[in-house]
Length: 250
Image (tube, rainbow, N blue to C red; front, side):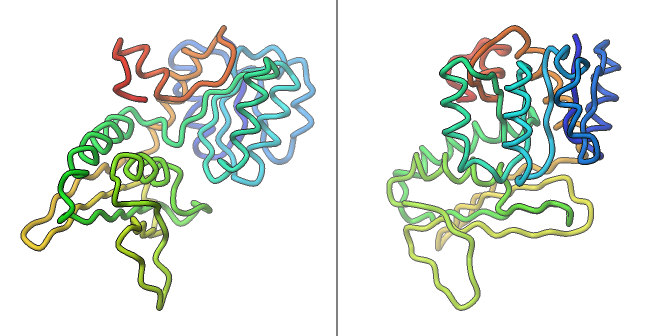
């Protein structure tokens, strides 16, 4: 299939390598210095574009792809406030998007475990949840998109937790708040730790990415799945379909 890559940094180069190894052709790469390529015949010829850029440019990149008639797989986080408007365009037939806050297969399994554990912990109020996410120093947004997804899914399952917040110096969080700490250090690809603490013991689940390889592979797999489809989809839709499970990843 023909692929376009939007954002040609480290992730873009890795996506190109994996895509070509899987027999796909990269017909266009777009970065900050050649955004006029959205109007090119090469870009319009792509079956799918894979977009990993920045929170400030993701929406305009997606809209430019829609205008060119090219479906998009986007793994950029930090822009989800605009997601309802993008979904509305997809619902009206004006674009196709598959969005994921994290394209790692392992992370999505971890998310399924998080939802199940949160559902169990809803009946055990003596346990208090917290979360820590650790990423490389180049990551601009916090908490990470993956952490926000994990947090929202936990809040949805636990009646006594109403929202999540990032702790602030000198401010004590209420008991009904899930705290999310963020750490930025070195070149850490991504670590997420969820802890349930009580007076007598502590339960922790975690996922640690060893490299960006898993994210890039998942994005290419998502592009393969998205080809020929129309509308709005998530990484959960794709995984539920390819694993023939109903609701496990949704």
